[in-house]
Length: 415
Image 1 (tube, rainbow, N blue to C red):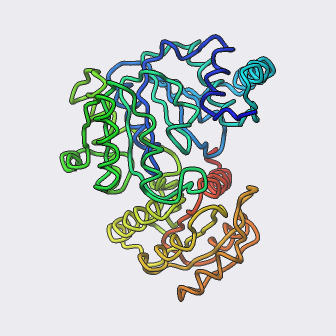
Image 2 (cartoon, one colour; image 1 turned 180 degrees about the vertical axis):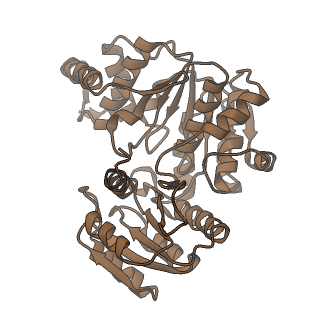
């Protein structure tokens, strides 16, 4: 008996639920890095233009309800009780789906957590009926649970890099082809990747499907005069991509809405300064960034360097925690080589895929850096208070960023 791939399983599941999503007007966004920021910028511009927006993102930083939101002047996460109810509806439909797939001669496999999240989000958006939905993929593209939208308004592919190689392939070409799987016949494609090898694959796929291809990568300079809420040179690329995506989707927005949307677009855990108003006068800046692969860490190092110069930061305490399936050796090499005046600590992350902090510490030492190995994020947090640091930076995983973010905000009674 053959196995159905996840996408066919998801389509069958949605059919059993009454095909929520059939009438959605979707901006579909995939990529290795930048897709979360681009999604939020896109939603923010549309909101500023007066539209109601459904926003679906992943992973969450602290609360699973972050994944499903309505933006209409107020950013409202789905209520936990309602989310639980919708997830239960999805699980209740699974026996029927399994039988259908079995009758068609396929082994159904197991319903995944991401499939449950995605189907529940579709049910919620079908209830709320927002004007537009900004739909971020999970880790892939071609077989991603969100790729059931047959005709989005636009397909967007942000930076493509080596990540999730076990699932998507171990070369940039294989990963690019997986990301290109969201491209649909006749639907315009917006990309920001400057990598010509990746761009060739995306352009070829767009041509094969009769799609207009829009390269946003040369356009980011025009956004330097804008006041972006999110810091870093890479956010200019994301801003250009968001604007071009909206234009390619045929949605009219004013220059004022674009400026206002980009100024207000904010995604927690992306070079997020938790105490910007109070830092600098005896209290260190406390920054969390969920950079979880080499490209993201490289962008983080550049952003931190610019920020450190601007704020005369001499001593930074870096808390690093990472998943086992990431290229953490390269990530540590980039942090060690590109960031000055840093003391490093590794910490255990409360997640089953987390790498042992002792192993991470050994790599810092092999790079010529002293490293404090901590059994928990809480221990690293307490150590960060003991030194006379100008800045504390938490990175390596969205999970450790979320854990220490919550710890800090509770400590300072900001939650």
